[in-house]
Image (cartoon, rainbow over all chains, first blue to last red; front, side, top):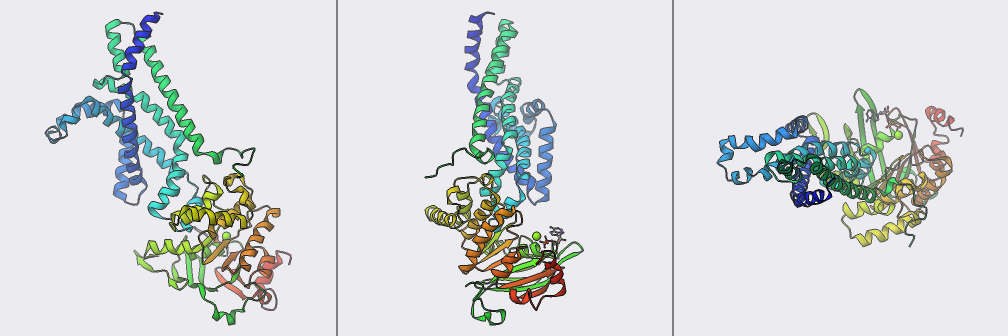
Length: 236
Length: 268
Ligand SMILES: Nc1ncnc2c1ncn2[C@@H]1O[C@H](COP(=O)(O)OP(=O)(O)O)[C@@H](O)[C@H]1O
Ligand SMILES: [Mg+2]
């Protein structure tokens, strides 16, 4: 193995890491917000909203993300009302299209994850909250959401790691993130193995870090699931 | 007031009516669980609700704080009637805020404690006062610590429910209810999920509450509690009040044949 080449490849790929991180963080944030909206519609009382949310979740979980991305990137411009709208300068950008399709897709998965989190809240704890006079938004904010989020966290960690990997698809709509740059490097050097190994290492390190953060978050949020401390806590 | 000097039903008119339930009816499908139950609880009353499993005791308590919505009847908490209306042929509360406020005035203690498992005991106790009553955090903490002291688990305030025994959890749940400064406390078999050796510690807390003059409605199978702590005993049978009166009366001359048969199972 040519260590010099590997090192220079690493430098080149790491230069593309900010783009990967931008795709990842923007789509996780927007996808998460969208998921809240979708899950709210999905579990709410309005049958029209519920039907829409079901359809949304099915479409974005049931079709390949790559095709969703192509449809947004190549397809949007075919609609005159989009092409001639004030949004077009943004929507023609590959980066915007990639973030949009990543966010739309992860919102479908995340909505389902949150819904299962909600469903696994013990009914008795909800009842106790109602009995002290909580309902509506207060009940959601103080009891439902905190418990649902804790329940959803393991599955949500998996989804977040999937998102890191999914950003690689953006290379196919000409976004120069890590995988895209790796492919360009291979086209120039024909050294497939070394370049892809370097790229894989970057994704692994990234996901390793994310895994640590999520594990720490879960640890911090769930002291009640650990066995009782040997020494009584904070006796003051 | 204690059970000993509590007025008998006929002379209770002097004290305020904290809770008044008129002719409550409730069916689940074709099964009529409550067939018109009425009850007045005056200030300081401790009423024990007895009855076989399935006689509708839990449903009755749950109808009082609207965890179940009664099909018919009226509920008055401290003089305020809960507004109901008909919607698509069903009886529903007319005003969600009124129901929330009324629930915050009625403490509910469940058979299985129902503490919020992701919160410490102290967090459980301050949750309602802080977020429902919107009172200052420092006041809530000070009062919560006093309450935990009172129920004897002050040393557990930073522990999580799962790390406590059943008796400690139930005492925490009682403290959580008391933190709302309720006008009436409803207990649904508070000791039935406990190991026998833990029953006493919870009953002691309830007895102390009764002696402080808390108005209490207690579904229980603890006959000695019903006899010695409450000033009124109601025996429910098939969704109706079968027997009602001071414990000396219900356990004595006034016992119905059904009640005699019921307490026969307890060997008393
Ligand atoms: N949510 C419900 N749906 C259908 N039936 C119910 C429901 N809750 C209670 N019941 C029925 O109502 C009857 C009375 O129950 P409950 O009030 O729990 O009795 P108790 O507390 O005296 O044991 C039982 O036959 C029970 O099966
Ligand atoms: Mg019951």
